Length: 245
Image 1 (cartoon, rainbow, N blue to C red):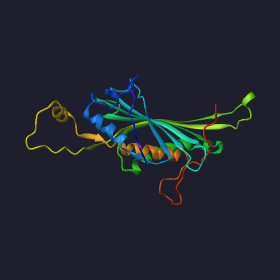
Image 2: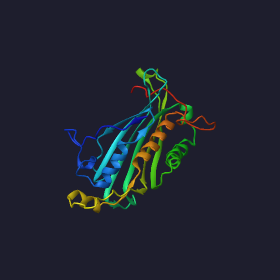
Image 3: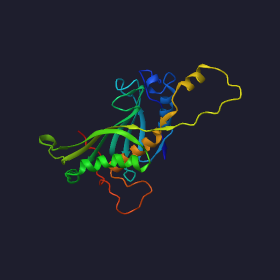
Image 4: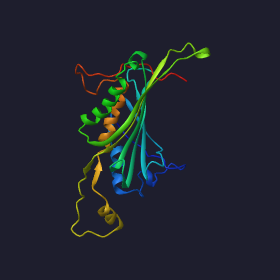
């Protein structure tokens, strides 16, 4: 299993800034980012921090992922995606919370699979099902499932037609209470203790949300569920990695 490592760049110098989980960020956000960094996911998923968007929320942290075929010699890419954690301490009306998860996923499919009229509904059910399978609560889910087919002509006419599925989605992760740290017999007053006292204890289990998201990526890529050999598990058939464009 691979653990999330590294830091998100918040500028040209590559240092962690307040909106990327640095020391200037709220304690609740730092705990949520720590949960992402400590998460363990399937070995087929390669995770890397990436600069987060700056205008979606006061604080943001982003990861990009690639799913590779473990049986292929050339590490072909089967699916790719980006997961963003947003935080607004003041809350957001449309989120109905202070945290929001945002994702973008791409995968190339065989044309006959992409022609299935129920494919969008199936892909959306995989997203909600991945969260439910790990017992994760969420609210205000929204998103789109888009499929696009490409046919090649002229100098590149020898290429086979390709079809790509795209999932754009967001949801508000439910909070879970964090254990309150043990207090010393004679607590010393400090800025750090004042900050902790002012912070809410409810922080979403971001590591579990990341693991569920990686489960979705692997399912879109056509990989079987990890450690599962049960019959009747449906996933998209594997295909070659993205063709050069």
